Length: 303
Image 1 (tube, rainbow, N blue to C red):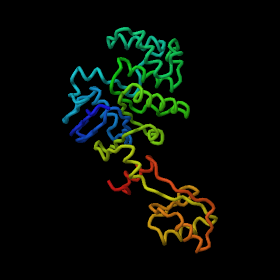
Image 2: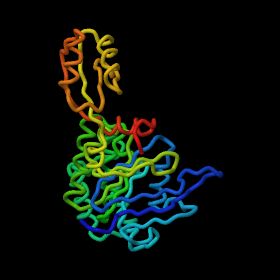
Image 3: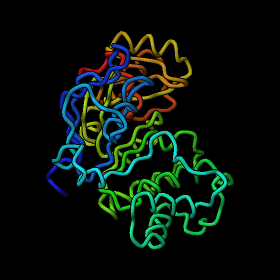
Image 4: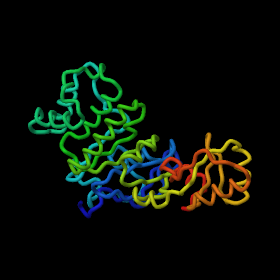
């Protein structure tokens, strides 16, 4: 993997009508990573992506792509993006839309390039299909195929899995992993579906009100994720009251009681049994990305 980072952002700001959408943002995306960009609506994710793509001009700050200024024409051609939608003509076929983009980009051997990107997004048998006849999942994959034209080293994707069904999300996950592992492309992806993002991301950036709250690798998340024991008993309310007297963080989550930050599950069972509560089910686990994000945003997790 290349030692130069795919993206380096320092002090980036962008305001609209005197209000900061991006507020002195610092961000580092390692080359070869799948970087999950996480934040609430209006947190600055899309604005940051548009700034990286050159669709907006920053008020201040620096952006480097592969060690070079983002305005450098030599590095701009190494970036592909899908922001909002693919911008395809509904009445034209998949092939025709890709051909028009090849012409816009001045790509040599466009037929060969179209075959290449359609194979990557698993749509080589759908080239003649009109865009308006495509499902949402297919349209998203066509958008990614558009972004892959010219063999970019960096792919910027804004919410590409939102609205997809279970099978569509699975296919998209597999495609994005292939893009990084087989073709060496770095992927910057935003999404609200954190459970899906957690399955593929190697790194994360959490943004709030235009500022970076935290950056971490998937390994860092694994180390930070709190351990909890979930259990069930016949008298859930009574058991919870007993546990709260002994342990500092006890909660009810759905049909389970959760006891946080206790390594020895035996001590939990023993404490309940002494009070006449029989545990019918117990298991140990760690919180996932979505719960970690919620705790971080609510201030329960130390930053």
